[in-house]
Image (tube, rainbow, N blue to C red; front, side, top):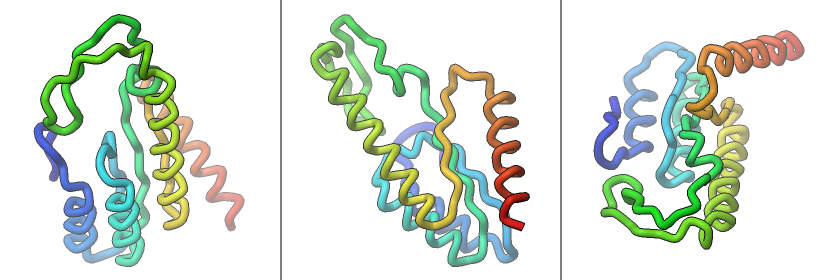
Length: 145
């Protein structure tokens, strides 16, 4: 429903999914989730309200998680903002703090709606990451019974 180009209205996507599905569904969202975290959490809440079980998988590149840059670098702005020339060594610590804070907000918001939230690093082998997540989920499900 959401494409890879341009700005994505995450809340609208969640709301559309919640309204289109008439029976209870497991809804797996794979996204970088870059946008307003409150919109994402409201969208997850809407899915839960409609009886769905959301799993939120935030897919990020290793460079987004580690910020390995050490030379002046030009970045394309988030969601279509123009290019920005930066000195990464001066902003690395702040960037990593902001990224960790954003992921904490996402995790807390999703968990407040009883939705799973995981970060997937694109440098990891997806089959291993997903099988590990599914095994953890199955184990947790057995303990709830």
